[in-house]
Length: 93
Image (cartoon, rainbow, N blue to C red; front, top):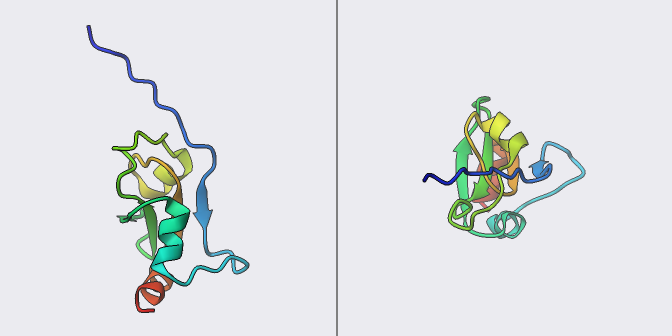
């Protein structure tokens, strides 16, 4: 008999760094926010990038509804939304 999977959604953990009051300047800060190694996920809006936990599925993190809508695919765990320009600036530091 097949087990029915219950998807649990992560509560509102899409952090949008377009908010000028919030500053992230290093990849280490992003890793700390995400809680592990980062993975870049393209967004429907090509000028943005979503940063998620690369091992989120293996850690069995809950689904992130807001991030899933932004990415157009199922996302788990916390996520950070950045403009590609901002992410490039962080990577070049």
